[in-house]
Image (cartoon, rainbow, N blue to C red; front, top):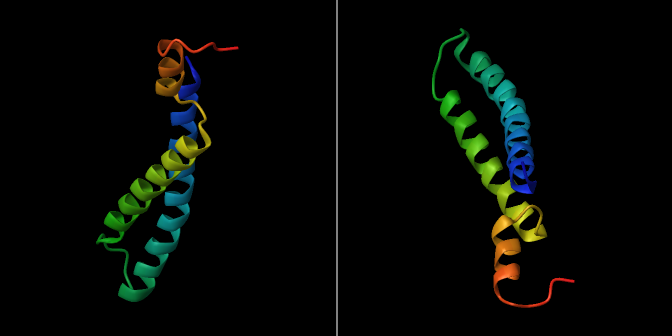
Length: 83
């Protein structure tokens, strides 16, 4: 298991934590608006928040260069000294 696996785990954990907090808020807000516990579009909002957060975490890690297996392979294959 390499850096890439742990990077994906961290990305998913960040996305789940933020989507969970947003989910708690939006479900409570929907309950206050409706006055009953029904199921509606708040679940789409939670999925959207998860997807956006996962993508943002992925871009942040890519910008920082953490756990990029493609970069390491490219550096080894171009013939440049690695040390």
